[in-house]
Image (cartoon, rainbow, N blue to C red; front, side, top):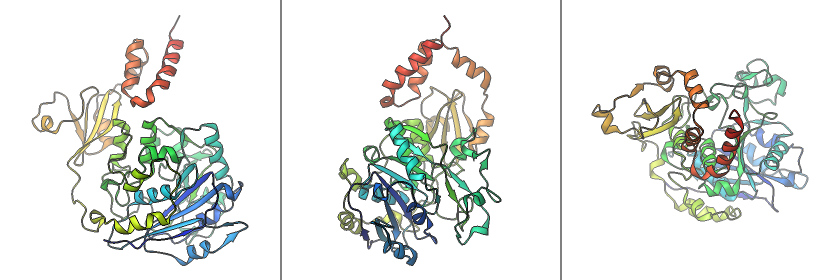
Amino acid sequence: MSSRPDLLNHTNGKPKVSVILIDWGVRESFHSVHYLNRQTVNRDDYELIWVEFYDRKPAGLRQMAATSTGRAPLLDKWVVLGNPDDCLFHKHRLYNVGLLVAAGDICVICDSDAIFSPNFMDKLIDAFADTPRTVVHVDEVRNVSQAFYPFNYPALDDIIGEGCINWQNGTTLGLNNSPDMLHHANYGACMAARRRDLLAIGGADEHLDYLGYVCGPYEMTFRLLNYGCVERWLRDEYLYHTWHPNQYGWNTDYQGPHDGMHMSLLALESRATFRVKPWLQNPWVARAGRRRGLEPDQLLGPINQRPEPSWKVGAQPRQLPDRVYWIERDYYGFDIFHHAGTWYALRSGSGPLNLQKKQGGLYRALWQAPSMQELHDRLPIDRERWEKQVSSAWLPARLWRKIRSQPLNRLPGRVVRKVQRLVASRPC
């Protein structure tokens, strides 16, 4: 497998924000570039980077790349990786290339066929001014009506009208006190973080589990939280998305191991194990450190010279990997695991699921089910009693539970705040 990379580079100066938009030979409309060029902030404050996985340069994007508004081009950087068609796409490689060529202090990875309001960029910049060490997410309003396909620049009021599937009470389903925000909010729609933090955690993980459709910037979100960043969702700004073929819910692309609702098992595992670094780090990210963005032409040679035989169509494993994923820690007193299509639970404190002990029937208490929801339903949970027990526990025991449930590098400041709150809450 060999690549034929190509690029366009118009960026001058030092923008505050780099917006990374990716494609893997599927985008029919490039309206995201249209909306992102109509923001309330100065166009010099941000750059738009488009990264294509295959050897594809569609006419619509070529026209935008050759057009400018005032001093800035519609598209600042365009990197075409030039992978052959017999190679499965890896979005995380696209994220890493975008991150490496980005010149902004803040990097935004977002849906490349979304609609953005004119205030989008302003709200993001304000969020980082308010909370410097944060990872920001913006949820996406989705409409499944085919009336907007091919894309016809609908009004936002039309998108939240007939055909909208996740808008209620003036917000999205995921942000409306959802009992399952992890799946109801769109963690893959838009994520922003400081470039130095993204490089510090090793960039996007290029493990084979993320090959194809089941992937997303949220895996970096979870590791950024382990690194000490704070997760923040904007509550007054949204992306908007209209129907197109092969979208979420009807997608037929290759899919790596996921939880049944298209959240990667490997990404979920990082939440439970507090992992910061990727399983498989991009070699160029490893060498980049925290330096300012590379010139795109500095990547062309390495991209062209790096074969990826495991990405070739047909080279992927036909069965789920024979490994245990630790998915959730201390779920009402239980740790949740996944192995080979089956979900398991042990009492918290039992350690990782041991396959030899499981196969030998050596666990005194082990629960299993074909799905996460069925496993949750089978667990002997008395939620009211558990919550009361946790809230009334002796202060050192409560602190130990908090310590055990968080990565070590997040503890110092958080422990101080927890101690202060717990002491203040004790009756006199």
